[in-house]
Amino acid sequence: MHSIRNLLLLFTVATATWFCTSITAQGIILSLNHDAEGLGLAATDWSALTYTMLGENGTTTDGYASGVADVDCFGERFFYVLANPYRLVTLDAVTGELLSSVMIDNPLDADVPATNIAYDWTDDKLYGICHWYDQFTNVQLISIDPATGAVEPVSDGPDYGSDYGSGNSDIDALGNRYFMFGGGKLKVWDTGTGDMLLNSALPTLFGASNLESYTHPMYHPVEDKLYALHMLYPESYDFNGPLFQTELRLVRIDPATGEVEWYTPEAVSMDGIQSGLCDIDPFNNRIFYHRVGQLVCLNTEDGSGIGAASEPDMSISPWANLQYHDLSTPPTASVGAEAEATVIPWDGASLLTLPHGLGSAVEFEGWTGAGGVSSDAEFWTVEEFGTLHVSATRTGASGETVTVERTFQIVPEEVTNDIADFEDRNACRFYPNPVRAGAAVDSPLGVSGLARWWNANGSLVLGGTKTAPQQQGLYTVTAPGCPAQRVVVQ
Image 1 (tube, rainbow, N blue to C red):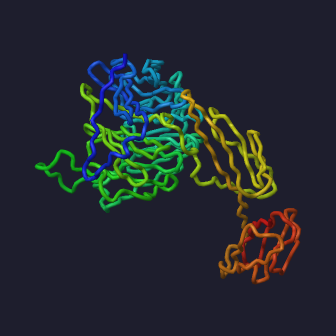
Image 2: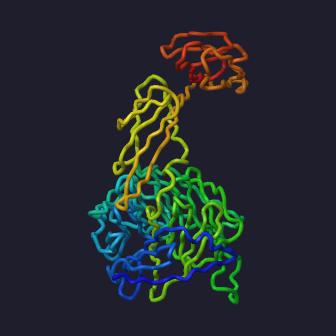
Image 3: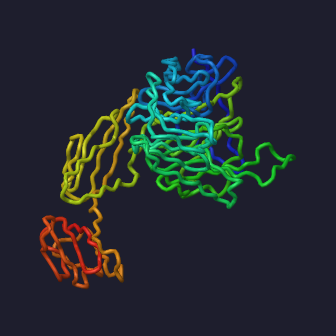
């Protein structure tokens, strides 16, 4: 029989005033209940404000790394790592039963063979890092087979000086990106190639780098944004003041550039957090994080407080390695719907085929190209410039279905000739591109009448004209002293 404990809902944390009307939102937060017997899986029902043990206390021993966990919402599996020796533990996310506890392979002979795991639900893989303690913590991106614990290196070698917080990582499963805060930077790896896409110093918001840091990165797969907590430490600690004097603010980060786009002007709470104990609800725009005695919930749209549940009794840590179950409420948006299009340059002539890149674990639905042309083939053969959409679905054991989609923008490849020194770059500008067949070209290069149009076969078709060719296609436009430019005529 499951033990159920009711939770007390608090309405005020730090300077934020929270309102009861928002508390009715549903959702399940899974976590490890850490008590004297060990670890067991628990579920917090946010609408009923109940805390229920799903499995038995002491399902496994202690020795967990803080925040190093993830949940497979489709296959109903909860993953976490135990140390000494390092094991990957998998629990049934519905019953709490132990499904497996496998030794984690260590092919790189790392001091820590695996930590900061994140589940890629499009390919049914776990990604994480291994690390060495020498030279201020060196880390390397790895993948882990959740069934066997086998480890494969993903990045070519270690990234040096990447000290990090336990559990301070997340994944963009659809976009094949692994995020981590380390060494004061946002680090982004491509999980397919292992390339580091970004290694950007995180900006100071209040002009004091020695008094600021970032923690708890959480990826929003609908918005294609990272949310995190920004920490502002006091200039001097007041020993007669409250225990926690570091201010926490919610920030939103562009994962492509590392730029902080927005943050709450006022603190959402004071410190008292434990590393990595956080998660995001992407379909209801909520953030959950644990701080001393509370489970805090924020609205991602403006950072306002939704509620804070008090910690249940009789636990050392009731919300260890908490993970929000994304399918505990119906998905309300497509994953990737708001992501920027992937730009694909093309010369207009050579063979170009694109894989859908949505992962092997999803049910592929098909492509939609320019003019409404569609295909259910695994690959799309590019025949014209424009926009491509591709979509797929995955249905969980609960019956809830998530739709994923990507957009590709096929654009003319930039071509330049060997003329590098010209007097007036503005005089060489050509637009619009694409341009309508036979239309007048009012950009500087068109008005000058100097444009020469060459077709894909390399033949001159127009010269000394202020209009585009009548025939649709891809052209190379040249002019004295200007770089050659690819122009699409539609």
